[in-house]
Length: 249
Image 1: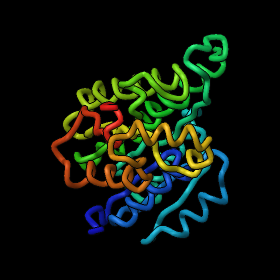
Image 2: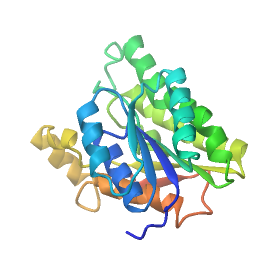
Image 3: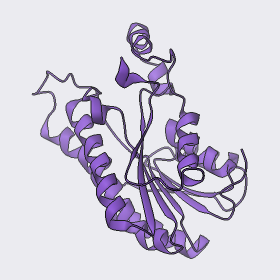
Image 4: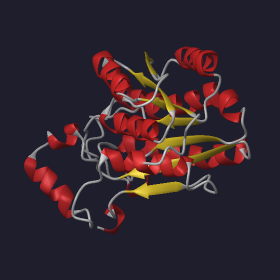
């Protein structure tokens, strides 16, 4: 991949997870210095940092529900790297609860999902806004989900949290223009280790619901993020689908 982000800095929340790690790798291969966060997988985060091409990358344990820790990360990024050009909100949480099981979707889980998936993303943008606006070409990429538009996903609250994220993308694209662009990248079911560990019959059913006949890879999500930062400069306030055509099924 051409190093089109040389000299730029990208911060990725949830960067040590399956999708986040692929995004970090694609950004680094495009020339960016990467700052990534993790919640518990310190060994995976350290190994990822060591594997990235280039220099200056670092990882920090950050809970995105703790706004103070996000503020500290933004301050450290500014002190160490003097800039942040791209912020990717990839940190998220969910749990499988049947949509018909209203009692199973308890208040605690609902609050956890919205604190992490929506409030955490907003808090990260709030913390990094001064750095992103510094060079008048900042970019926020919110990793959303096709669940936001289809209403099908791990549970009702997860779908609603991703719909809220897409609405935030539009609101902040307007509010932060022209210095910062904001877009959502919306995957369908992604071929991660977690998904490969699911029931075989369920996975076959998901493939049958995907018109391209395969699941989207984490690397393809990373490619979409890099494209938003490089080739797709006019885009803001929009949702970029990377879903294999799942809304058509």
